[in-house]
Amino acid sequence: MIKIHIHCLATVSAVALALSLGAPASAQFAVFDPTNYAQNVMTAANTLQQINNQITSLQNEARMLINQARNLANLPYSSLQTLQQSIGETQRLLNEAQRIAYDVRQIDQIFSTQYGAAGASTSSASLIDGARQRWQNSLAAFQDAMRVQAGVVQAIDTAQSEAGALLSSSQSAVGALQASQAGNQLLALQSKQLSDVTALLASQGRAQSLELARQAQAQEQAREQMRRFIAPGQGYQPGNVAMFH
Image (cartoon, rainbow, N blue to C red; front, side, top):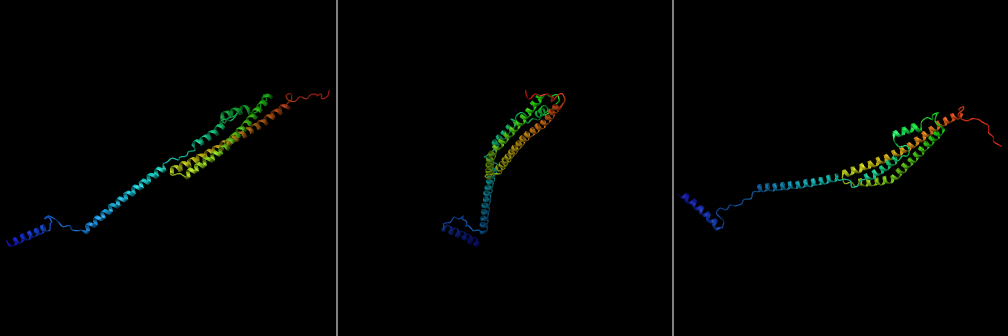
């Protein structure tokens, strides 16, 4: 009984002391835990680092998208139309070839009729007419070659201007696609120049071939005319000539 009273007395004394200090009976005293505090600080630091990593990742993705957009951007300059016009002009000059065009069937037909061997039954008037036609073929071919030459020379200024513009566009390209397109257009320009050289060689070769064919036919015709001249009863007939009356 004495122990019980003493315990009650101690309890009452503690409650009274708490009431006298103005603290509620159920109040608990906060205790600082350094270990728990350190763990909370580390958790906050790790969370902040993860957020920074996510921000950096987003920035890298944004840069990658910007670079991809630049790489996919089209070249703002195009020389396609100019090159097509220049090629079309050269093709037009070739298509306007006089008398004998660049056509295999037509060439075969004309050579079989105008450049064949002179027959014994061919009249002198036909021989002269054939020679005149072959001369006109050669003359027209040389004129065609000179027209193609003039067209190629006139296209040099255009080619230089386009090359300068494409080189400038290539140097200022902002992406792989623009640089590739500029390079492709430069290759197209070179191909166009090669086609001009091919057309020039073709026209010159055509003129030279026709002239050589004309010379060969002229030699054959000269032999035929000489044969007729010296043939008994066909060519020259001697006779008396009265020079003075």
